[in-house]
Structure formats: C-alpha cells, structure tokens
Image (cartoon, rainbow, N blue to C red; front, top):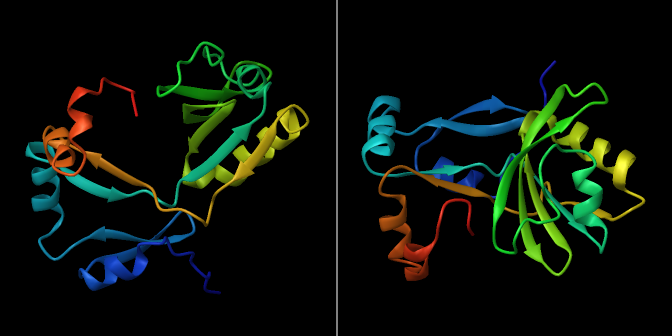
Length: 174
C-alpha cells in the first residue's frame, strides 16, 4: 500500500533543480541534487547550504498568558525571552523525560513562534492543545508556509547580500 506524500511549498522547485526525492516524515523531500551528496556536504561545511525544512512543524502561540503557559511545558525561561530572540527548548513529560525538542522565538505582542520536528509535529500540537490550549491560542501553520535553513560558515555573508542588517545580528537573534 503506497502512502500519499505531502509536498512542501518548494517541491516544484526541487524537481526543476534535479533533486532526487525520497519519503521523509510523510513528505516527498530532496535528498540530493545532481552535484551529489559529498559536494553538497563539503560546500555547506566550507561555505553555506540552503535547506528546505518546510516539513517541520511551525506553530504560533498567542495571548497574554502564552509565555507562562509554554513555560509550564518546557524547562526553559520563556517569560523573560526578549522580543527578537529565540531559545532551544524541549517538551518534557510529568517525569521530566524528553518528548521532543523545539525552537521558541518571541515575536512580540504576546506571540511566540515554535518550530518542532517533522516526525513529532502532530503529537506536539496535540500536547500543546491539551495542556495549554485553554490558556492561549495554539495555531498550527503546517501546510501554509515554507521554512528555510541557511547553514555554514559563510551563511551571514551570503544572506547579508539580500539583507545587510543580518551582519549585526547575534546568535539566536532573528
């Protein structure tokens, strides 16, 4: 029985660029391009590489109690997270075991932006809705948006050609 794979908003571009696609976390995702995995890897390690991570879960938490509510689920200071900054966190169970890791960004105006792992996004969404859904708005953005990750030692240099202000940014700032 074949599974119908989801497609990221950039799926057609991947095909146009010659990507070899494979199933990953329920999505048809690029695993390599015509130059090959080794050249792509080395280029990213030495320069920069752009990755489509749109399959990951993007979730908005909104409301006056959003930070306090989320802080009840993660062992991380969210209440004092400055606007424009993000933190690495993890959802824990009642015994303190890790359920999943995530990134939390403070967008300001009582709004948090979360990025959760693709394979766990439905469970993470259910966890949020069950435990804090009555305290803040929990809005999944699973199929609506693309998400890119620019990685490598030259990432800032590459991006500052399009957005010069990134040159002054610090770690975990957006």
